[in-house]
Length: 290
Picture 1 (spheres, helix red, strand yellow):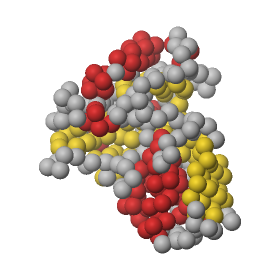
Picture 2: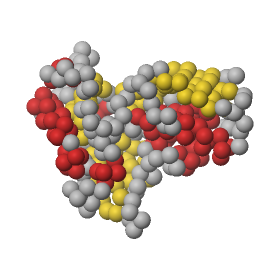
Picture 3: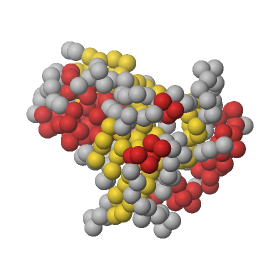
């Protein structure tokens, strides 16, 4: 049976995240810029002819019914195929971080199985299916850095200036995992930020706006405040991504010899995670899987 190995599932960062309102059904309206970064999980997927779906963890153990298996089951059901798959995951992106690791894994599974099962669905068709798995999954299916609006379903590719693509980012993840639902239900969440525009963002892409989810996340866990303070002190800037708990900072200038780890900011606790990252031009699988 066919197989695809060494498939990247990159994480994302939200350069800003504004909550601009709330729909009658309770869903929040947002504006954000999502960027792909080179902190990634690696997947190896083998097709099976017996219809069974199995996940094998090559790193940390994942929940029994994670997004990867849910994605595979959904695609199998909607396509009507009788094929199955073995999905092996080397998990490197921390979860509960606001970095979209699980959503990216699910997107890579959909893209890979679309090819392995010979479905030949378009990205648009896969993205429409992916909405059922979570708001971030379609972004990873489309595979471009993007301006995102609505409830996350309005995704517009955006060309980022060189100062964004060429400047490294340090990312620090405290031990706490933040439940997204708790953040959106928080009384500390601002839900009426004025609508922004792409030209306004592009005028100051590294310091534009804020993350409206950051204040409620800091109320949820002091470790997020600690991470923000550490990064602000080290790099002169810091911001949380998504609903947390990871935070990131821009470095002053590109330098191929720079590195970053929790120990660099006097955190020797192995429960903290961090590394130096760069923004990707587009998804590593963009030209490989369609």
